[in-house]
Amino acid sequence: MKYGIVVFPSKPVQDEINSYRKRYDPHYSTIPPHLTLKEAFEADDNTIEELIIELKRIANSTDSFKLEVNKVSTFAPVTNTIYLKVEPVQELVDLFNKMQTGKFPENMEYNFVPHITIAQKLSHDEYSDVYGSLNMKDIQLEDTIDRFHLLYQLENGTWTVYESFVFGKESL
Image (cartoon, rainbow, N blue to C red; front, side, top):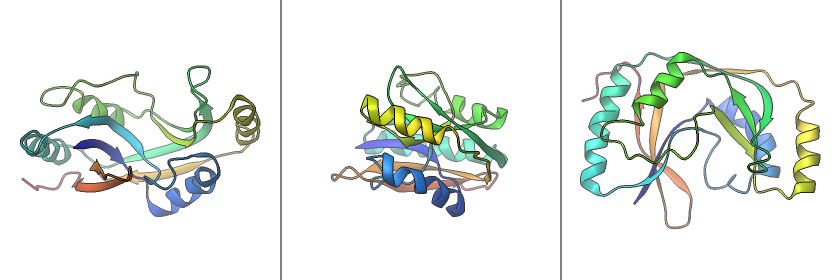
């Protein structure tokens, strides 16, 4: 089965982000707005049980932190993906790094750029228009992150929560 690990912002922040995503992101209906901590990976039941133990340990030793989103950016020219830039606070970077070592699969394709995708798979003309208009917006979102989620992918391509891990909570 295919799994991934993400942070979901709060509902008010998701609603704001979805106001952009619903028009420009073809994955809008398959997963809520999120910040990826671990790219999608394949795992069997035994492996996932081992990873859950590790994820609980990570969550227990992590404190909540502020997530700040303050501008629109892009991965162009590599891809025509537009995203909301998330400030790389140390707590977030540390959390990401903990999920790239040990029992976790080595599947990091790109360097960690904390972001929440709002538009992707755009033609060049669409990309230019959308980025031009979104880049002029003054975006200031702040949220407190106190958990992360292990997701799995259903046969229809949608992602759903397998288990949530609350920070600083003894859940072993």
